Length: 180
Image (cartoon, rainbow, N blue to C red; front, side):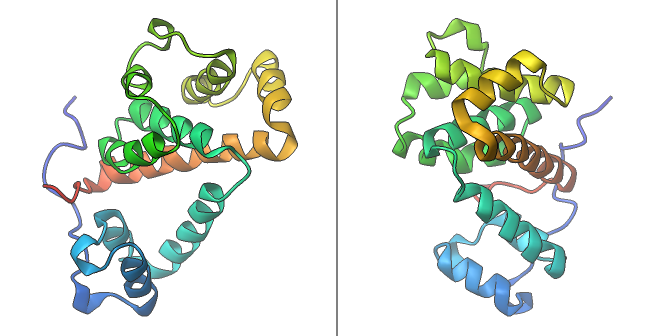
């Protein structure tokens, strides 16, 4: 089977003259038209869904999980989903939040090959288990819940689900990194 994400974009990003007010304000707040993100300008082709998706994603990015943990979960999900675009947009944030270069490399590979803390292994193991089984075993749930409590445990599951959705959209729509 061929890689469905290989090839040119299936939908081109909207040109600036087709942006609605919401997309234009978001692009301005994200660095201006010269730095417009292709994920925004492509998904902006469905304005109502895009607005709701941005609100949900924003709630997760400003949630209760520690920023370092959130970014590790996003990066590991990006790896597992083959969402290189998302990796490129979150690796810098992860670094700024204290993820070391060797940890970034380790997130890309076999988790057992790195000396992760017990807390990081709870997080990254949960991400992998959610990806592999679409759920958490009782033991994994207990470990996650002990670490993050009610709200954080719900948020982690929703975060991984959100970035599975993002990976699916990126790969299926063939959204290209802005450097392409």
